[in-house]
Length: 130
Image (tube, rainbow, N blue to C red; front, side, top):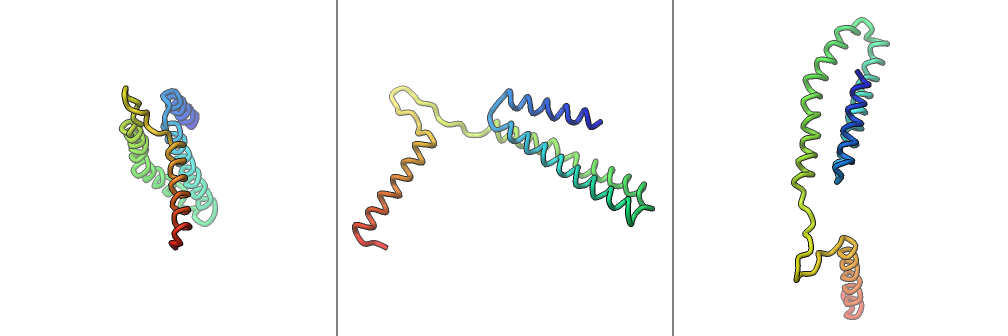
């Protein structure tokens, strides 16, 4: 069963890579979150059921499986659907139009902000403003 989960996750990651954007990181992060949650839950249950709660092993595993299905699984599609919708409706940067300058790149914006800060510091120094 785990083989199919891993194959499905890799296919989903491949599709996210193919379509590009921020979906790759979203799918990768979602996969890591799910893997860590399953690993921690499985390890905790194994430790408890091997030691002090040995007599509760079968009922506890059945309860944990039922709770995992009822609590965790409904959230999984929501995580991926939410991230997909956020990526789908994210504001894109405006393209250059004829007769208008192209929108500033992030580097140009950061450079302009840095220049503004330097100008403000020079103005304060000249006028002794603290």
